[in-house]
Amino acid sequence: MRVLPQFIALLFLAVLVQLTGCAGRPLHISSTTSILTSGQNLTKGLKVQTNKFGLQDDIVFFVYVKWDEPTQKFGAHNVTFSWYKDDMLVSTTTKPIIFNTTPTEIWSKRAASALGAGHYKVAIAVEGNVVGSTELDIK
Image 1 (cartoon, rainbow, N blue to C red):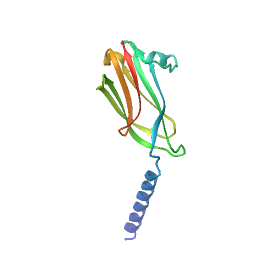
Image 2 (image 1 turned 30 degrees about the vertical axis):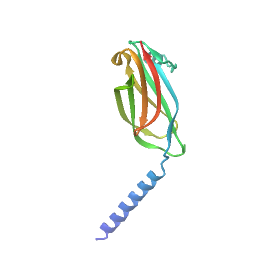
Image 3 (image 1 turned 135 degrees about the horizontal axis):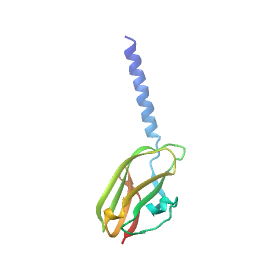
Image 4 (image 1 turned 90 degrees about the horizontal axis):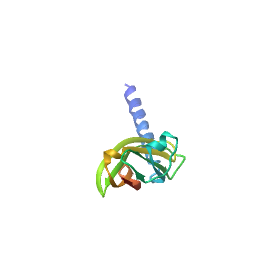
């Protein structure tokens, strides 16, 4: 019967360690840099900043995020890329990202032909908090 009290004590200790780890997480995350480039540039190993695309292009948005305490891991969080045309949401992608080192590179890719010609804004949010955005044109 000593097994049950030992199990409860071990379970309590595990929960306490987990809660302490969460309490120690940094609370503020922000973007340091963002790069909007084409898929063609990436095939050449280049991340050349541009905000003008043709319908034949792939659009790739890189964002580098950091948090206040670089010695701590930020953990796993949902990251959402939202693509807007004239302030109307037209595409969104959410994916889990594990933030182990700061800064962390996050990216999203869209075919310009799937979006269509026009003026766009793409925003990145971590757990619903927008940490970066940029605007672009597709002709």
